[in-house]
Image (cartoon, rainbow, N blue to C red; front, side, top):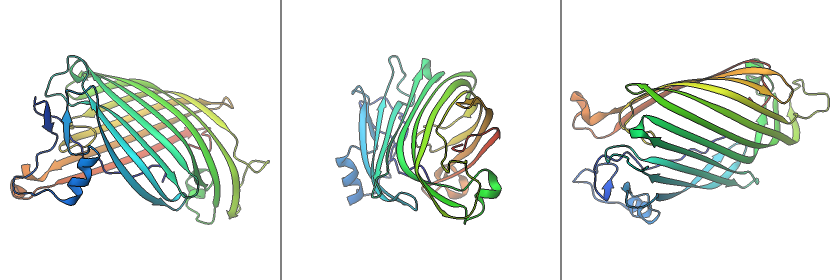
Length: 289
C-alpha cells in the first residue's frame, strides 16, 4: 500500500452561520473522550467561514509490510472563494505527511477549488516520497507469484493539475496533465527469478501525459460524502523518457446511502458506502506504472 489510510471527520456545509456544524449530531448523544481529543486539533466537525482558511489537524498511525510502523499528520483546510453561496460546499486543501521506522517518508497535497458556484473546479495534486517498496515484475502473471519478491527504495515526484467544467447537471468534463519522475535504489533480490534489466536495477523514468476526464458527481461533499453518486473515468496518453508511448485508464464508481433516509432503516443512524475502482494500462508502460 502506498497510501496512508486516514479518517477525516469533516462533511459539507449546509447553513449560513459564521460557525456551523458540518454534520448533525443526534440530540441524545453525549460527547466522548474521542470528541474532546479531536476538538483540541480543530477536527470538531465545524467550519468557520469567517477565517480565510479553517484548518484541522489529525495525527495518524499506520503499518504496512514495506514501511513497517509509522506516524503521520493529516491537515485539512476548508475555505470559500469570493462570491461563493452559503449552501455551496467549501473548497479544500488536504496535506497528508508520514514517516516510518525504516526511514520512509513523504507528503501528499491535494487542493480542490470551486469557482462560479461550483460549475468550474481546479484540482491540483502534488506527491513527494522516498519510501520502501516491492517489485514483482511486469504484468499480472509475475505479480501473482509471491516468490517474485524484490525490495527497493522508491523516490517519486508527481504533479497532476486538472481543470473541470460542468456541462450538465452534476456532470463535468475535464482536461489535465500528469508529470511523474521516479527512481529506485537499494534494489535487493529477496527470492524468485523474474527478468530484470541487464544492470540489475530499475531505470529512472520520467513520464508526462495528457489526461481527459468524465465525471458524474452528485455527492453532497467530496471529502466525506453522506449521499450521492460518483462515476469517474480518466483516460491518459503518456510518453516516457525513453520516448515510448503508453495509455492509462482509471475508473471509479462510488455510492453513499444515508440510512436515516431509508424507510426501512429510518431509526438507524449511519451510512453505507461502497466503491469500485479499476486501473488499466496499455502500450510500453514503465515499471512504476
